[in-house]
Length: 159
Image (cartoon, rainbow, N blue to C red; front, side):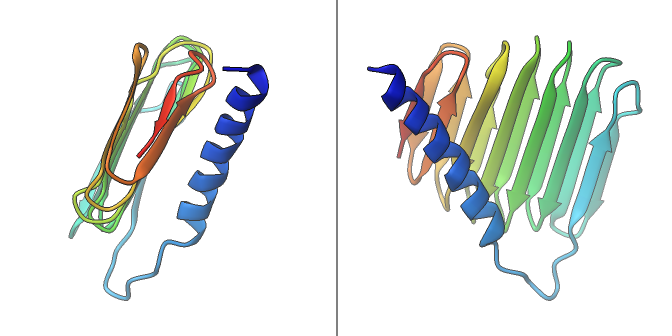
């Protein structure tokens, strides 16, 4: 695979993430929750109705988890920054370490986006309704509609 194809795949992953985030429909009864942990801050957790989040980071990292009728869980250690967004029944988990920048977005009932890619660089996992998208340091697995990609390992998948 050429470097151009790898770069285009990464750009496509980020573009898709932004599109999912921008197109999330609002629900009148939904109560979004956000948990953010700045470097050296305390771990946070919140549960309001069907929205839940948690975040944890060490003194050199930052983490943010957001739930909008879903669950977002972010953990960042050793100079990492992690972001997890769970929408409309989705579960997003982002675990970063060693300078990594993982993001996970889960949108829709039964969706799971799990991004535990480690090491320097950005990575993203996006899961659509009913999908399970997993990104680890050893590879990516897409089961259902979604996409995953790592700029560190140059591995990814499209479901």
